[in-house]
Image 1 (tube, rainbow, N blue to C red):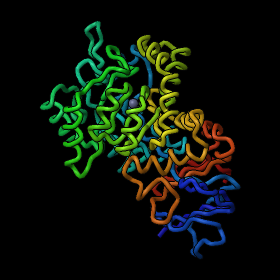
Image 2 (cartoon, helix red, strand yellow):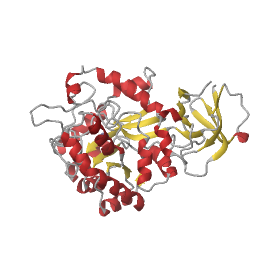
Image 3 (spheres, protein in one colour):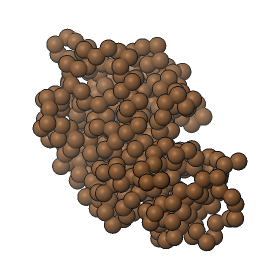
Image 4 (cartoon, protein in one colour):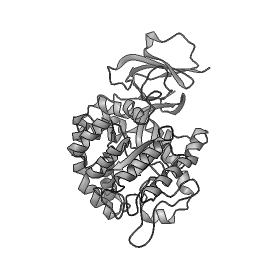
Length: 414
Ligand SMILES: [Zn+2]
């Protein structure tokens, strides 16, 4: 039996209450067995002791919307890069994600069950994950990258990545079943258009109400698999919420009725405020962002801010998600200060990245807070996130990361 004691830090447990000074956390293998002031720790011989050196001890952080299989490398690179290179790149992206203190993610599309299996088997290091495999899209929708030149850049299917384009009740039914067969833990659907796609617009409604209901029902038949919807325009968001979608991703053009519906249904909002900001930044620095995406990002960035602000003020449940892959992996924690820009307190941002994010994934019983009985994911930061949230954006301030009871990053001088 392995006991790991983390001591000499201030505990921010993810529940949103007062931090605990001179705190400690005791882990036994992959379980948290005690949390509190160091003086209250049970008297066991720890096989390993980590001195947090006056830092801050948090639960493993959670990003509920990432794409671990890509970054914005540009069109030429996509056309020229050999197929299997993407898997090697993903190893690097996962490392960056862990280095940012993120021990759990939900992948919002383009990651197959093989990558997840390789992490679970310990062949490569990466965050714990829920995967959606490929995101359902209509023909000509967000997710359909058929270009008007005639080239089709839709992430092509391969044995463990079923094609996800579907139109009409029968086809959406089949596609949900294919994603589940391919190992999807969650179904992702594009309910509206979006920014990074060539022939649609964020406000376009895509799947019909009937199609969305079929998707939600079919997923629910499999031990309650949940559905996450990329949804930016108000009508598409409302269709998704009425259909019983579990989380609305992006939510750029929420109106009052959409917000009311979300509260009524208990729907989560995953804001990804960083996504349009990062698109515009990268467009400044390189030619990797297509002009249609730049125009749509510019058009939506202010509306996005206002929309999330209204949702927050109305009390919609907000889970942290970034759309990492649209921005470089490892920069995920920039989202936290953007959430504060819409009015959330630093503590609320942290809770959205821990407790609420875990609940959004349906894993609230085993992740998201430092509490007895939960899985042993812990992060130690050098700086006080309640005092300076932006300091977390520098991954050198993420000192130590423990996932499943094992140290996966450690910058302390030991
Ligand atoms: Zn996304």
